[in-house]
Amino acid sequence: MTHFIAICNQKGGVGKTTTAINLAGFFAQDGKRVLVLDLDAQGHVAPGFGLQKGNGLYRLMVGEEPLINVAIPARERLWVVTNDHTCELVKEHVKQANFREYLLSNLLEEAADHFDLILLDTPPSTDVLHILALVAANFAIIPANLDYLALDGVNYVLKTLRSLGRYPGVTAPALIGVLPTLYDRVTRETIANATLLQQAVGAERVLPPIPRDTKVREASSHGQTLWEYAPACPAAVGFPNGSRQKNSRNLVGGYLHLAEIAAGLLNTVK
Ligand SMILES: Nc1ncnc2c1ncn2[C@@H]1O[C@H](COP(=O)(O)OP(=O)(O)OP(=O)(O)O)[C@@H](O)[C@H]1O
Ligand SMILES: [Mg+2]
Image (cartoon, rainbow, N blue to C red; front, side, top):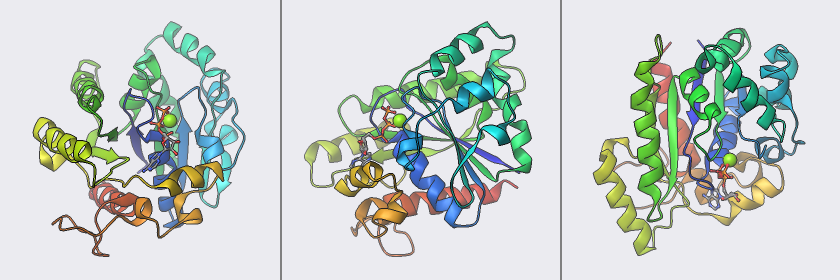
């Protein structure tokens, strides 16, 4: 079975693309066949892997080219459907289509033969592609930086997830969790907002955080995943603290911890 994870928050700059890239890199190294589909006109997924932006999404959704022709290899067992300014034409096309909410999920049906995992990186907006991604997904992650407006973005996605039931045949994706990103554990504001987030959405829905780490920006400017650029940095492996939610390395948080949690959940659905 192919799993689809939507990574969404209409707030900009909260670490959606970073999360997609590093989860993809992890699972590909772990032996899975992984595709990252870029639904954002900014097209940041491709440069994150050292590739050029492109019109992959346009070719898939408007040109109706087969997914397998459009997906370009980024690493061993890892492919990308690129995006760029042509995304505006994709959105126009989608708006005029019948049964538009199902367009992406239908197009991705053929993916089952080719990929074990598809990560859907969504734009920082509430546009139509956002809904298409959630309809196609069976899991969701909501990255959230812990500033004072963080709850707005998280609540919006949670509300959208609840509203998906109105589309016939659609089951809302299971929430892997809200992922605190750019986490600064010595900043009072971050700590206070983390507590607010836990109170608002339920502590069990908040994932171990991704530390704020300059290596993240450096890695993406080199077109590399954290596993390639700085595999031992805090954003990759987490940090030691007194949390009970530690992973096998006695550290908490980081993309490795997230990947372990996600892998555990994916394994429960065969
Ligand atoms: N843990 C982190 N530590 C430091 N910098 C980070 C971290 N996570 C992301 N960044 C940086 O923050 C910026 C925004 O990250 P990213 O592009 O992943 O967010 P996004 O939610 O996809 O943004 P957009 O909404 O514009 O698509 C990037 O420059 C990225 O390198
Ligand atoms: Mg992004």
